[in-house]
Every structure is written in structure tokens, then in C-alpha cells.
Image 1 (cartoon, helix red, strand yellow):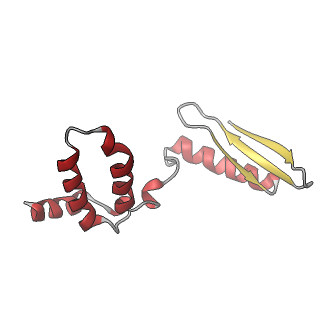
Image 2: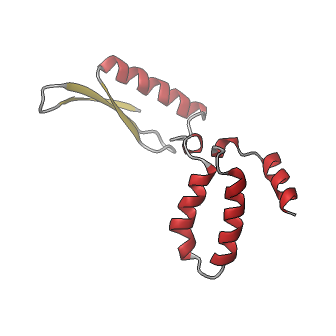
Amino acid sequence: MAYIQRREHLSGAVTYRARIRLKGAPEMSDSFPSQKKALAWASRMEAEIKAGRYFGREEHKERTFGEFINYYLEKELPKNTDASVKLRLHLNWWKKHLKDYFLCHITPPMIARFKDKLL
């Protein structure tokens, strides 16, 4: 259910914060310059969540495969010291071939093509 909160800032500006809390979905909120826009956003987001079309932040459309691999190499690989050398080689090979693709554009057939190339 949506909740709209009127907020007055120290500068005197007024904004409206819309909060949505639905069972089974993460809490969401955003701020708007008018109550009308806040209500419209809240109604639209509630409908999308209930219809199963909202999946949160669409990181797969914002991050490239290269960025994903860089993050993994920096943050996660050091935790797995047993296979880190071999895994780093594999990840760098995949990064070399797929680094400029957004995560949402990498498909199973594409992986299969590169896998065949790797063999």
C-alpha cells in the first residue's frame, strides 16, 4: 500500500515522498515535487508489482559484462584463494570477448558460440 508524506525542507521547498510497502516485495520510495506526481508514481509501481512486471533496479541494463567481471575480480575472487589463478584466467578470457555487452544482451546462444570458440 502506498503512503504519501509531505516534507518541508529548511529552504522552504516542499516535496512529497511516496512509499510503497507490499508483502513479498522490497519497500520502495521516491520523492516528487507535487503530490499528484507522487500518487501517479505510487499507483503505477503498485500495479507493476502486483502484475509481476517490476523486478527492482534494472542493473542488467546499466552494467556491462566487463564492469561485472572487474567487480568480481576485485571483491569476490580474493575470498576464493584455492582456485583464484585458474579462475582469473577464465574470467579474463570471457571479459576480453564480452566486455562491451550489457548484461541483459548476453544470451545463452551467445555463450554457446563463445564456448565453442573456447574449445
